[in-house]
Amino acid sequence: MNPAKTLPFLALLSMSCGSCGTAGPEVDKNIVKKKLAEIEASAQKETGEKRSPTNDPVEGLSLDFRREEGLNAVWVLQEHAIDLSKKLPQKIRFQRESNDLVLLAAKVILKRPGAAITTKEIVIKKRLLRFQETRYVLLVKVKSYIPAQILGSKVVPGRLNGNAVLYELDGTRYLGGFSFSVKVKRTGSIKGFDNKSKIRDILSYYFGEELKSGISRTFPGAKLQKITGYASY
Image (cartoon, rainbow, N blue to C red):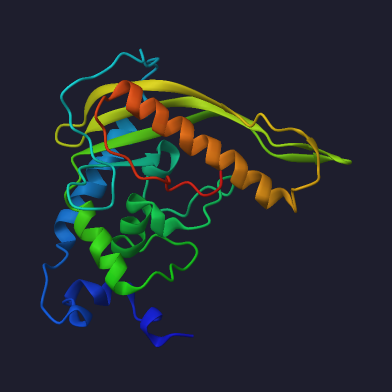
């Protein structure tokens, strides 16, 4: 095992970019904690709401979900965000939690229990520095979920639906949202599917594409990652 991947995560908070040859900005643990607390507050506030998103376009926000310069928005499943210090619910699987900036920050800063993250420290540091700039959170609420199934020689990839709502962290202010419905159109022969895990990955691909489509429709001009943080639902 690479020793560089076994260092305690919190050690990166006092590290500079040694491999880059020059010192870089440092992760501010207090800012990250504040952002995580604001995300939790938004999720808890939304839990008490019974609204149905209107799907109406919301102009002028300039959302940027990319893990690059300019990031100001993140997304996370609402049931995860209600208490980011707890282990994730068992019904939901993530193949790579490090792709989800909210869960990564909770793992590193709040020491949320769960699977170990093997991402290099320098990459984690870069992502936490981006997370510090978060101003908005998109809470994704899955209302119904039919898992992938293999029935004899046939495959039923599954479906899910729900809605997604955007909050401004400062003041936990609701800004708008949209509903989504995801169904994998390909069904039939089991040929081409090795196992249920691969079927879940196909469903998650459509899940990600539907989220990106909903964001683009509802928040015009939003900049998006090519792949969402959800590897498997």
